[in-house]
Length: 223
Image 1 (cartoon, rainbow, N blue to C red):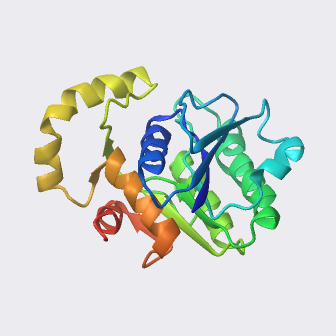
Image 2 (tube, rainbow, N blue to C red):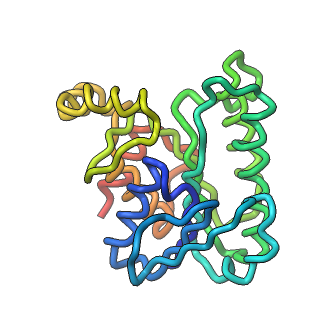
């Protein structure tokens, strides 16, 4: 399988990139982003563009892939709905619309979030925008589209969040992660399980289009 990964420098993306490079089922990974992934590997190729809304110059490098693992995202904290929608909805759809004609048999997997609002009408801004994004992607004629809605994600393998407040939370919660996972399997996962589930969905499919944390963990356990 050949994979395009967006968001490789983020916490989730780091985990997905690591799993792609370790998994023998993955033949090639292209990290598409505004900066290089910072990782060197025989499987990996960085495609760096200053503006992800302007992909015309790199389209030839984005053809012939089996899956897009879309892990790019920002926190809505301090953002207006207009600004958040530009990054979360408009950019995601622009990338998807660019990749689709180049890879008509592609599976697209989008990292959304727990409590996303599929009705697009709720009071929580980020949840409405994420729901709008999920719905728009689901209508696109990819081979398959899977929207992942993880809850709490524990970073493993030395992965560190770039957000200061999150780093503090993970430092506090980390030692308790095995307990939280045992007590709340429906809301707790980790970067390794999430990445494995994404690859399994891309290669083997998933039972439904929207996967919550419990579904993600079950999919990761699939042989």
